[in-house]
Length: 479
Ligand code: HXC
Image (cartoon, rainbow, N blue to C red; front, side, top):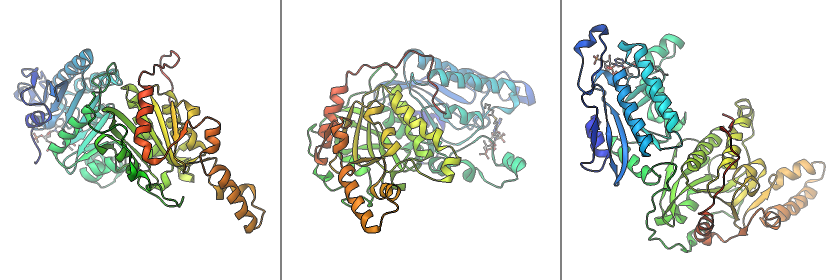
């Protein structure tokens, strides 16, 4: 299916015959530059509400055919109206963006419109899910509003996001680029991390929004919808027996652990192409939504770098806003060392991850499959940071660092033979979950085949968890 017009998009997005349009008669009042001759009923945005899988949602969609989908103050007024309705009744809002940004002919009035939209985006944040589809070129304010929402989806080869277009870039920095190389879906899906999903066409994008909403509650006072579990809760997963390789230096795909344990073995990954060393996404366990945050040993040995820390922290905070329990799956050698990481601020970015896990009050469960070293062990939802249930496979290694690294520091003056002995000694002591379990930092050591059952039991135990942080205006997460 090729590029759809805005009404076709809304038709595909919503359940059949549920769309109720609002403000279709609104016109702009601008008379600059001959604009009095370009007054169209509804102006450049289609707004209203309807249903997705029978649940109320609000929607606004830009019409690029009307002055490049540029934002007039009338368009802004229409969008703000549905934003306020969505917030008042506690329903998600979806923006279908295809817009050249502030309507140049209106000057400050158009800029003011963006400010009003941004303010509602911020007030709605953490109260109702806000989802932005980017379905055409989006410039200026038409990027910042989506950036304030929870999830951004882009359409490959059809959508771009940039603060200023290629012409302005050329004028200011003398850099040559086109719309796609500046801010296409591949750029934002895998380099900048701005986009959470890259879809092949409009239809896939709209269907992905429908699916995403299926995992989410309508607002922060509700629980996510429950999908009756037809998958046995005690299902033994023998396919997990050999996922973690015996050789600690060999990598594996952590999704081979996540997928088998989800209901129907289905995992809905988010941001799969950016910061691949951490995997995030939703699955269901016993019919209920779970947010997974997992180190990916097959990328950078799963090490936590700046991008991975940010990606995970933002997702954890989303889950916490919307009452979605978190399962962390851990196999991590540590925070990624290096000059570039240090100079770019791994300290403050890595701190976001620590902050997000420590602050979250939803049920928090951790499974250590293999390496759990140093600061990364603490950061990845450790018991000491406030996790509710911490489990480990017998292959777990919980230590300050790997055996060879430790011996090279502690016994660097010894002969290679002596060092080999020390490595063996260190491995016996730390290359297992025993010491952590003796201290109670690990609640139980489980066999891989029992993972699904054990995690479901942990989540069920925590279901009525009622924890709150000390009253405050808001915390000061290291941004
Ligand atoms: C009024 C606009 C417009 C705008 C596009 N059009 N952008 N009209 N205000 N912002 C009109 C064009 O004049 C054209 O009209 C039609 O829409 C289609 O635009 P094209 O340029 O032919 O389309 P395309 O080649 O696809 O390029 C799309 C585009 C480009 C990359 C978005 O139009 C562009 O660079 N527009 C300006 C982007 C921008 O700088 N916007 C302001 C951002 S500042 P005709 O009549 O010829 O069909 C901002 C402030 C936010 O948004 C403040 C908060 C931070």
